[in-house]
Amino acid sequence: MTPVRISDALRAVAFEPTRDLTEALDEFYAPDYTHRSDGKTVDRVEFAEMVTRVRAQIVSGTVTVLDELREGLHYAERHVFEITMADGSTAKREIAIFGSYAEDGRFRHLSETGFDLPA
Figure 1 (cartoon, rainbow, N blue to C red):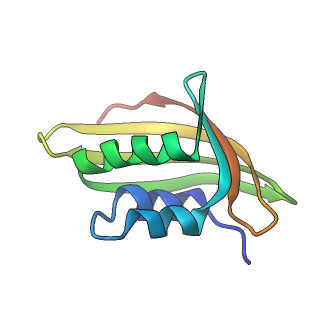
Figure 2: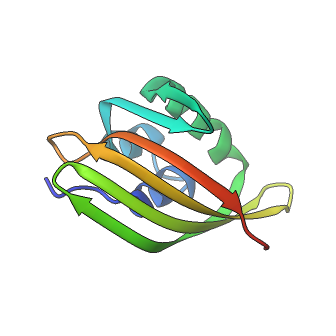
């Protein structure tokens, strides 16, 4: 399997509300996936719950990849996302992600950090 990209994963799980979430998660994230953000690590079940909450609030979004690197099972990427929420508010953030792949090419672990940008 070709290794997945976080930009494709974001589009599938957050910006395509008609796509089946379980199917999208299975395509991009290994069963033992863990996610670290803001100093807290969650397992795949907790990650799916978080994505479900966020997805319900997003009306539209885009992601622009700034840098991306794959080396064996290691992955690093930096992107900017812009979203519009159901309440009309918007957000723009730059995110840096570091992680690893499972042997099948899906993400096994991702750690992220980021900051807000002017909208």
